[in-house]
Amino acid sequence: MFNRNRRLRERKEIRDLVKETVLTSKDFIYPIFVVEGNNIKEEIPSMPGNYHYSLDRLEEIIDKVTSLGIRGIILFGIPSYKDEIGSSAYDDNGIVQKAVRKIKELNKDLWVITDVCMCQYTSHGHCGILKGSRVDNDETLKYIAQIALSHAKAGADMIAPSDMMDGRIQAIRDILDENGFLHVSIMAYSAKYSSAFYGPFREAAHSAPQFGDRKSYQMDPANIREAMREIECDIDEGADIIMVKPALSYLDVIRWARDRYDTPIAAYSVSGEYAMIKAGAKLGFINEKQVAMEMLLSMKRAGADIIITYYALDAAAWLKEEA
Image 1 (cartoon, rainbow, N blue to C red):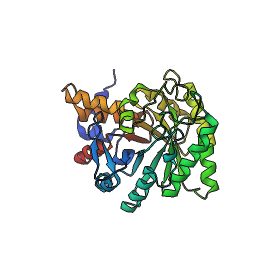
Image 2 (image 1 turned 180 degrees about the horizontal axis):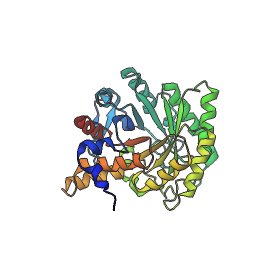
Image 3 (image 1 turned 90 degrees about the horizontal axis):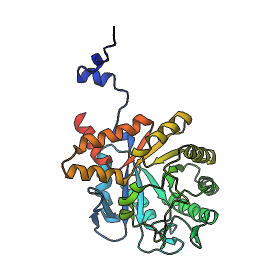
Image 4 (image 1 turned 30 degrees about the horizontal axis):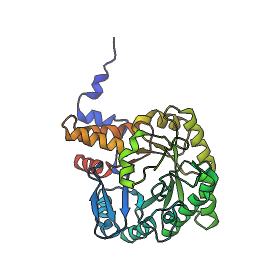
């Protein structure tokens, strides 16, 4: 006698009852790109459906995010000027700092996360302070900490450092605590790989390095045990949430992390993943909705508690239609 597993697939009603993994709009964080200027809402060519917003146009996207039941956003700023030390990143009147204050005026309950890095603020496009052609890890920590503090002062709920400098979580936790921001949490880009999937984002954030690459500080895609060491270090230093980035080609990393750690896990479904689906759908090769939702489901099934995705708005709307 053999097992008849198909009995539990017979109709939608029973499939829904035994479903092991469920996506909801509460799983998503939506990335928003903010720029200086007025009345700007410009579509990002390589990421159709995503835009650069000036501060005065933020209300429409914040209203849309809220109406779809999405609880959190992550902000990326494109500054009006760049220099060798990325000084606009920690300017209290910088683009992200102004955006945080504006969003908190629009919706004080929305969970606002700020990306903390230097690449889009430095004239050379690297994620820290250069000494010669190398990024100086320990000198960069001082700047990363100042950026985090300026975001907390502006009202950010969570700081998300993406620079991949050693010791950055400890440096941020220390400066936040010393200045009375014990309640501000940290989502660490713990296993951030040096990936080819970031291409569209670098166009969107104007953050491509002017020379070389980021392989000396972002992770080698070949390594998974190293990712566990990175994650463990971040947890020990005070990270409240750990992240794996990218997501789709690194589901095994998410699974390993889920099996080893109780800390909440975020998966960043990056720009290249989004752009591939959009391009395939435009050519008529795939069904956009079905492929996007299957991709997001795989991330949660692998063990992610949170998914940062450019599909957040579409996915939340599709889920709402099906409810």
